[in-house]
Image (cartoon, rainbow, N blue to C red; front, side, top):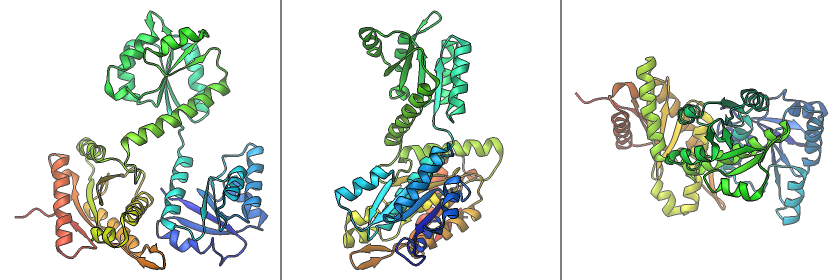
Length: 423
């Protein structure tokens, strides 16, 4: 995923523009825009520049937010998130910036790794074309189809189900973020179906929202106690349906990320990235393409923690996670394997192509500057790569990548090694 940052200031050599080089090392594409150039500013918010995020000083914020509000009032596309940099980090100043509509604030001097992480998260959230998946369980086929059309028009993937007997199969195949379900679907009770869904532990956290004309609070609470989470009382307006679904899908995905992703890096957890490797092996066998798996380790990481402290160790780990996300494809899968180790699954990618890519990423990572007061330090990485197709199981492919990583470290670190079976 390419993230494009527009740096808005009145001085091309100023504080904001000077961040371009440092952010560029993370794989971001940066472009300077003069805050007094009205045409350029209008282009930002009309989508001409394809900006993922806007970075500006607090002095330039008023004109930036003025253009953002203008585009929103005219019904244009959603404005890029605005990240503000300023020297004044008092409560009153930050409150003023938040009130203006900025998405984030960083006090100067800027912690670049943290800035890069925030910009990336904002860009990922904004670029998501689908705002969630909703399964609608409703026996009125015409009404269910209407709901689907309304949600789809708002960028929410929706699917209707009129036969409750197919409910569990649809949950597995569609993987919805939330379920909208009538309290009575033909001969089947929605309350009982909600309880049935909770039989499987994988769906314990799935939000189930009743669609019903029942407005008695006591009856609603009784129904909610049986396994659902909320009521939407019919008739539901199209606007309210969209807003409700979008908010609940967003919260559901946040909860899913908390459960499935590493809290420090936002990458897939150990068990999930290993599952993705097994899935990729199955895809390789089905479609016949070549894929690779890589193990990545930070060199001499114990020295980083011992010298600079665990706080800076965490900053280094997050920096590598951000760099991997920015430089790899959206189809590539990245996980934190444990500690300072990362695991990457690269679909449709030969081992040589993977080696070239990780070598380039390693070079970029070694150029990142980590500042501690007036002192700076750099960190390098080592990587081992194996072909997914060359092994009967994902576990064996991973073991081979780990052996290649060990070989790389044995040969001096700061490099990439491809697994080669010993004869």
